[in-house]
Image (cartoon, rainbow, N blue to C red; front, side):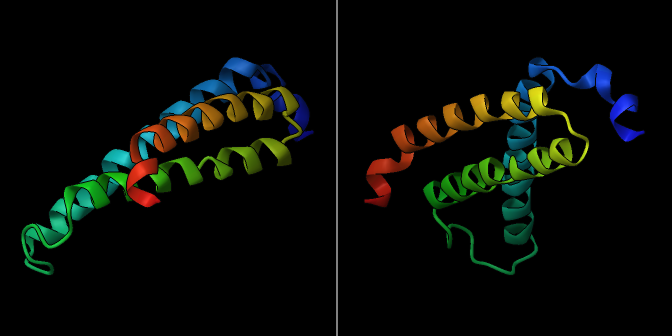
Length: 104
């Protein structure tokens, strides 16, 4: 029953949009959390380097692509699952290009 209800969304473009929008959303949420914690005085200003903030926020956003993958899996949306893989691989490549040298 659930399969027929969401069948119209079982498209690669749906997965691609979810794969790019969710990490971008969480990236900015995480940066806002870091700024809020700093403003509340829980950490010293500049106590956590901006490189660490950006690197960690981007990595958390990329890792959260597992959520739409799991949702699409439970709804038997195979094409949308494939669509999430493309942006995830692209984002991991961009992350490694930008932050790879600072990690190694």
